[in-house]
Length: 316
Image (cartoon, rainbow, N blue to C red; front, side, top):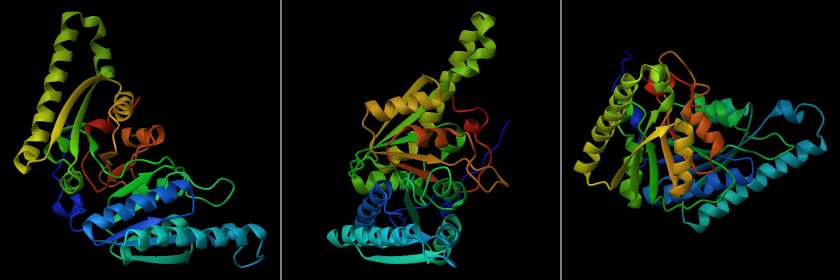
């Protein structure tokens, strides 16, 4: 049986006490959306926004030729920071803009550490044809290695009222500790938390030919799902947080994706399920698959943990 441990208060994170929010921007539409979300959150919690543009010397030929692409890319970076400052100024949110040179992912992670950043916001798609923050490169690396929460956005515009927040409950870890940052969002934005558990139908496959036994297995899994949701909602009731519980059967990513669309979810909050000894979000995880398949902003809460039930099987 897999064991888990309670996340510490330090690992849970909280927007209520957030002082610094970092936006990594390349000037793409997705990065602009990340900026808008970061500014909205900072406006509520009284934080300072740090807008960072990273120029890669290797890609630009920084030490040699000043190519047209190099000049264009640096110009786009400057424009990206101007846009970020304009968005923050309009909301009267303090902002610091910075250009740094180096490996983008490493520079972002270093900035997080040296400036004591509480939340990172970044787009998962970048500018086509130019050095960019792609999910498959920079954003992916940051998501997998950051020790704090990372807000991942795409180019599509979404409500920043955060009225409906989806919190998948995969196993005992999530049921014992709904991410504190999700609770903070619910408190600050008067949101409804949707606690969502999927009975993975693939777990029934091995019992397919067992006749009546299969029904018993299914009933047991559904009962376990109900128990997980009951455990997850208990502290929310105590805190006076509005919530709804949802128990579905099917493929996890498919069910979550369908709910995000039909319920008009404004934000998804998920644990990263990082295994002990690993420095990254697991490849093939439900979180990663959902990131690739929805346009809704997703807040990935990182932190070293024990194994999670959702890691033991592939997402689809």
